[in-house]
Length: 239
Image (cartoon, rainbow, N blue to C red; front, top):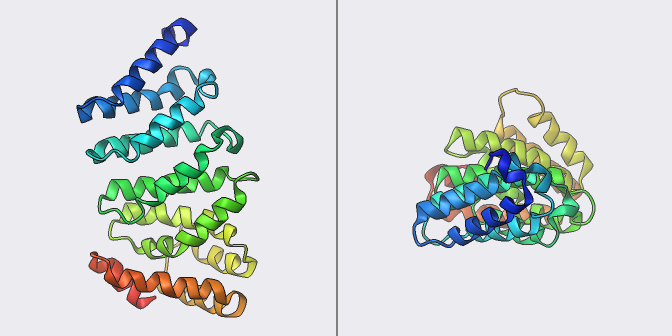
């Protein structure tokens, strides 16, 4: 996909259609490689990316829900990340909603790699969101912020680091300036995170500023008492 010949219009379309066809292949490795190839359009013909953005997003979002292979899902997440970094909010169009919802389904996935990439992608969307999808994304953050808060102490350290970056990007969407300031004090810089102190500050500010969001915190946290992960259950109980 990085061959200079791909930049020729007469070659690009046939290649894209072959990869689209192979993304449906019975063999999961073929599906995985097809998705990787589509993501690598970013390197092979970056100037053509926006022209084919809708075509790409439809295929990659479908691959995010591959029913048989976590490798295909992971490959699609990596491809989506490559593509999104070259686009703006207006370029994503109606795919924004489908993509956001699909990503959120992997926040609690048992596969470490899928959790990690779901947080990476959600963070990319937070950076992209400016106007058109701001209200919608803010609502998705409100639905997911407790999950992000708990996964700051994810059993996998790498996932925890990515979650920290994403949580920091998402807090402004809650619309609470005092809370945002308090969270920034904990997450700015590279200092070691002290989760229990962060939790205390969050609860204290919500008790003063937003009873509705505090209730949301309470209800969402209780749901994690039944998590299959001992570590996440322990974090929820402490919270």
